[in-house]
Length: 357
Ligand code: TYM
Image (cartoon, rainbow, N blue to C red; front, side, top):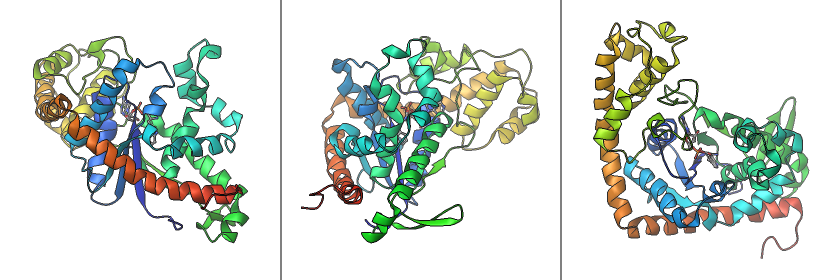
């Protein structure tokens, strides 16, 4: 594992209410990447506890995310599916990254500010250092590509900064140990151990908005159930939520420019496009001039057609967790093998005694 190989890593928090934004912004994109990369898809339970989680619900939520991965078409035999807490190396590398990252970098993280709210003194230390654990998730596997929704962009930039600082700080040592590979940083070349990860963000559903308010992103924690379609909604619930989705009074425009200043219309057209693997322009070609009275039932049909089979399969898997638990166990064992190699390298690079026994 000394040279950097192409690899995909991504993760989802098991905090319940897995929704259409998580599916379209992340999981749906994970599936085709399996054809071109070795992929590691993680259930990030250590991240979940940065805000209070009821221990009685934790297991069900971990299994729910795993079920969503499997039901959506992720192959746990060819690739790796596991939960973060079972590979201790994530937390170990995160500690080292806590010592690489600077307070100023973390102070700029907008998601911390949003999640901590007004009373920052009461936020957990884990919530503040959340992005160093995320960098560790990715770099424990020296992953080169990370598919995520738009809201994770800043965290991935921080991951790149951490990798770069580590590579710079330890360049001589990495070379001396014949690890990593030469990398260009400006005019200089350093011997880099960690890749500078490429974010894979984009498409019509990189940021799915609330169905009740086109200025807020669809989220697990929105108090309104009508704001999101959850992966376990049945056909009636999906149709109802789309029927009740906030819109304006105008018909759909002919071009994307016509969606400007119409966040709710923009969102529904984006969801339609993502569900049908096309783009907003093509959707508008078919529905230009249509009223929401026509467009919403068409969207509901598409959403039910795509989501209901996944939801059915999730329910089947969750009814008897034996299969899910076996996938997580096998995935954790295989992930740990890669993680142990990286940590042995990193400990040698940092200069700890006993890294290789
Ligand atoms: P989480 O659990 O909040 O969300 C999981 C994935 O869903 C995407 N997402 C959305 N995409 C489009 N529209 C939305 N409204 C929407 N809401 C959520 C997120 O961008 C994400 O891709 N920090 C991460 C989890 C994580 C991770 C990682 C991701 C931990 N370690 C390493 C990648 C690599 C998070 O909180 O995701």
